[in-house]
Length: 47
Image 1 (cartoon, one colour):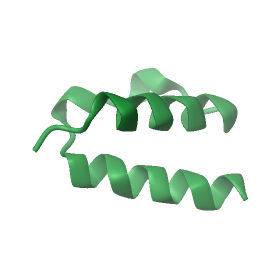
Image 2 (cartoon, rainbow, N blue to C red; image 1 turned 60 degrees about the vertical axis):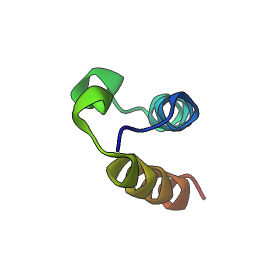
Image 3 (cartoon, one colour; image 1 turned 30 degrees about the vertical axis):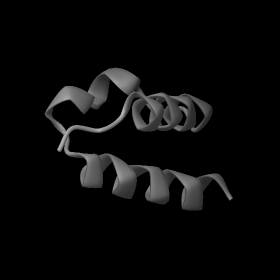
C-alpha cells in the first residue's frame, strides 16, 4: 500500500529539520509501513 500524502509531507518535514537530503528517499517506491517506520525513527531522533 502506498504512503499517504500526509505521511510523505510529515516525513519530508522531519528529514529537512534533521538535515537529511530528501532526495535520498524515494517515497514513491516505499510502502505505507516503511514510511511509518521512517517517521517513527525520525521522531525519536528529533527528541
